[in-house]
Length: 246
Image 1 (cartoon, helix red, strand yellow):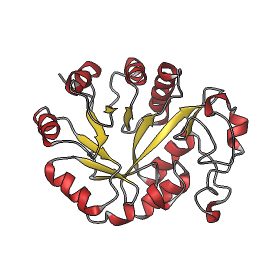
Image 2 (cartoon, rainbow, N blue to C red):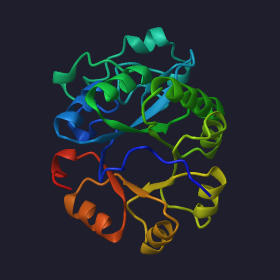
Image 3 (cartoon, rainbow, N blue to C red):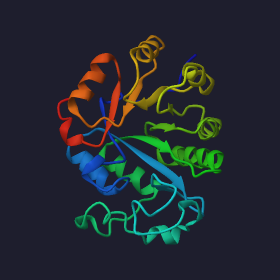
Image 4 (cartoon, one colour):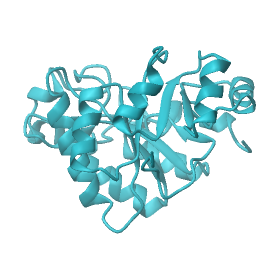
């Protein structure tokens, strides 16, 4: 089986939610900080608005990371465009906008940063979110190496795969289930994404099958070094300022 893979080498460190703990999550400010620190790749979350537009946000609701209220999936683009996604992190980031997927993709290209796009569907919107995000990726990365695409939702990944057989896909689990390899194979997925709490048997099996393992959220350098030494391919972290030289 030939698994679709990125046309770029996975780095050892990905910045979590654009800039980790150093900037408001899932914002363009985070992308700029990651680039300034020499981090070659970022992970971020994409969810659909009520208008079907992909935006960068993790939660199904707006309260934790913006000054808005309510659900992302019932909020219009006009509403989301007005939100402050920075002040919750620190007053110095006041008026940092919630970015569209399109604006984030454009900045990644400008900064030379690779991306792990996590499809983050609102409940009940798994299939359509996978489809829309995959189609958008084919448009936004036209002529450029495709990003790595991951999700906890098998439905979203199956939908994305139908749209784009060439898309490099990673399946996300907290702890990989006992049948993780079968499910990776069913999706013709490229990589396994999971928490840092995994055992050597999973790492060994993945290595034998040529499947990269990406672990999140790794914020201590000794833990990152240990995971990489054990055979994990990449760590996704908030404290990117501690990972220099890895």
